[in-house]
Length: 120
Image 1 (spheres, rainbow, N blue to C red):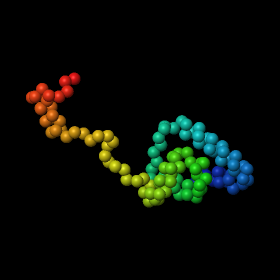
Image 2: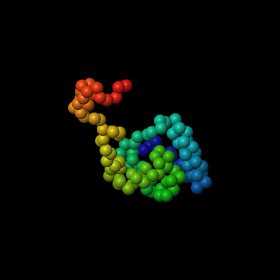
Image 3: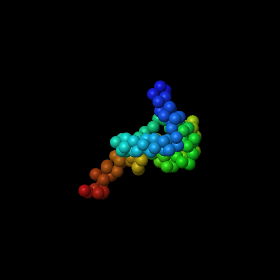
Image 4: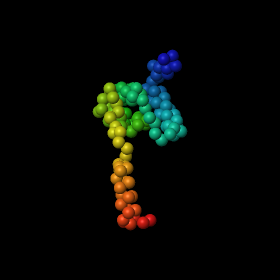
């Protein structure tokens, strides 16, 4: 908290014009730093809850400010609720399910005994 006190003092003493310049600087600094990060950033539930809490206060102006996730993702988090910001994900792997091993063995046996099947 002590680290943030100078920042709070700056905001308390600044005029609207000065605040605008500070915000513009911080937005530019954030863009530069985000360009150096990996393409995907994962957040903890606590971080998401904090963003939801603060983002709700900003209101519709958040569309112009939000950069860490898309605005659509943020609104989905809000719709799901503060308690659990991430919806339940399927544990199923993407793609076609694997063929059962006993079925694979049967097909190979049929192909070898009858000469039927793909020859390449």
